[in-house]
Image (tube, helix red, strand yellow):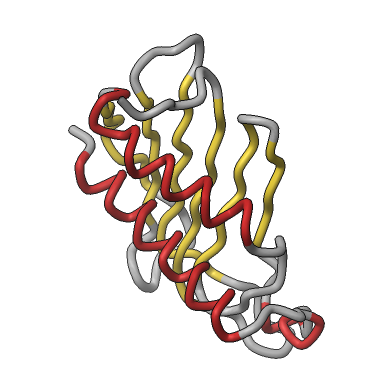
Length: 140
């Protein structure tokens, strides 16, 4: 059986990047959290193209049993790569299980150039993004 942390918080954002002085405009954002050993609670909001405001999405849940293998894979990846500056259009922030990890510096602001991540680490980060996508898709 997979050991899932009793409590954690994950924030996931994805969307188009800004450029120059244009701000980053996210297409959607999700928060996934688990408290006191319960099921994962997933809240989200989406922004339709051309709109400025987000619309809340219906809340979702995912059982600890279903989420366990995905969260374990995600934690393994996040613990093995440096935080920050992967560029692209996705960001992940994690808090829990003795780990505080954040990636989300907008590449449009020049922060991506400061990243010392290797190509392998960037590929691992993309794997982490796919895992979070899978968690959201599996939830009901």
